[in-house]
Length: 138
Picture 1: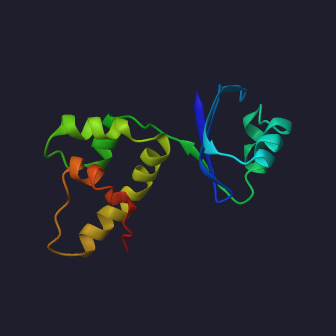
Picture 2: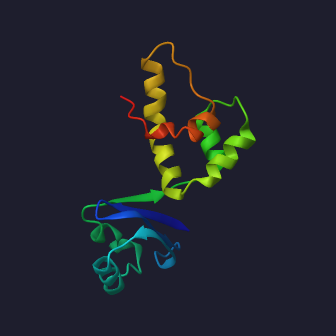
């Protein structure tokens, strides 16, 4: 199943759509605070096939959800020090949108650490607990 996440400045939260290998909608999750006009629009234009998703996202962002497992995060974070079980508990308390955001920001975080000598990479549990992916790394 391929999953897609839609966020927008027009609403708070996210919408998740899941499609089978044929591109037919099999899963939908509404984690957003939608206004009545958004709900009406969605009711009239519900994206039953995945090919229409790019057309419905005007001001927002459409992201394909990749592997959001803790094991994938552990490999990508690449700092296997500290309490793995605590980090895993923290990981699964996060929403899918937060997990996607973390995985997208890891390269920026690693680059920041490389370009600022003397900084040590945080333990995974610290990184998650302190929501460090929300920092602006430049």
